[in-house]
Length: 195
Picture 1 (cartoon, rainbow, N blue to C red):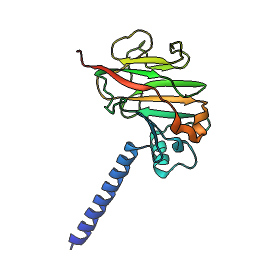
Picture 2 (cartoon, rainbow, N blue to C red):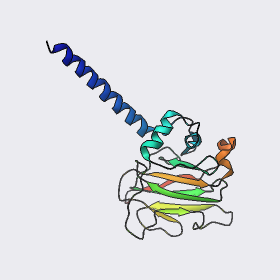
Picture 3 (spheres, rainbow, N blue to C red):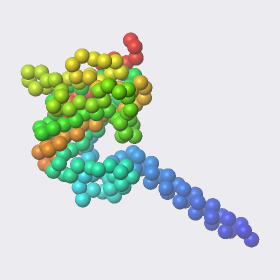
């Protein structure tokens, strides 16, 4: 007597549960379609526009993030070094080169969930175009490590994976099709562990 309604209820519970779970996981994995990859850096220029795909819109709504408009800037994410190895706080890294033309840029470290780390007060958690020390050819080098480094240094958390976020503000590349020709800074692993 209760067998058929019980089976229908079980089937609906499984279907809705798996559907909800798969949708949440899909939103965690990607910002949407149309990503542009330049070395280890990835940007999603369409995610910031009215033409964004449904995944990008849902990701933006779920994260509660205020994205830049197409003419305001472009955000690049890096989760690996230039050789494709995942970024790990147990290693030290060197970011070197130049950024694309922009009036202002920032570089900061986030967790895998794209939330900033809460490090001890006084530790540099970000660097920007106004504070970075440059060489004579206008290129720069930024050290990423748990221990203090001379010149440009951004502190890493004690352990775990992390991501880098490079935000270019008021850049002509944000609204152009020439994004694929940009030169982005390299991310090189300089050491891992205490060795």
